[in-house]
Amino acid sequence: MPEHPLGVTRNAHFNLRLSKIETAEDIPEHWRGTPIAALIGAHNFDQPIDAAGSPELLIATCIEFRFMPKVPAMYAYLIRRASGRLIGYVSMHAGRYAIEDEVDSLEAEYFRLKSLFKKIELAPLFVSLSSQKLYLPNWYLEHLAAPVKEEEEQVAAEDYLMLS
Image (cartoon, rainbow, N blue to C red; front, top):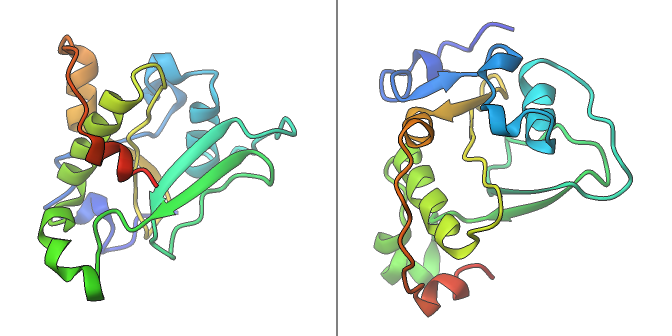
């Protein structure tokens, strides 16, 4: 299916910051053969996912109602969070959590969660709402090519509270 005219690959703000996943070889090697690769396969290659009967993934996404991951029942836990889009009575804190740039926000959230969950594989995937295809942010590919040694840092208690 061709990308919608308003899709991310045709948007000047995104198209140079995201990499398409058009073949299995485009999937980072350390994800191949994993449930992450199966999720990418379902979205980008219309491959069915064989459910094992118990959840294999935790998918955390914003509360965007136009996106539903292509996963069978019992394959993944799905958490939808405001991801910074705060309204109403919490508006005094909205500036801190507001998302001005989705790709930058994904990067910040990836490194925040990586500091909290050091032993869990995180997959920062960007979804195009027009095509439902998943993309890799270029900053993640750069991180894989030249990983920065993560220093042991103190995690703020507020970061743990934001998980609930």
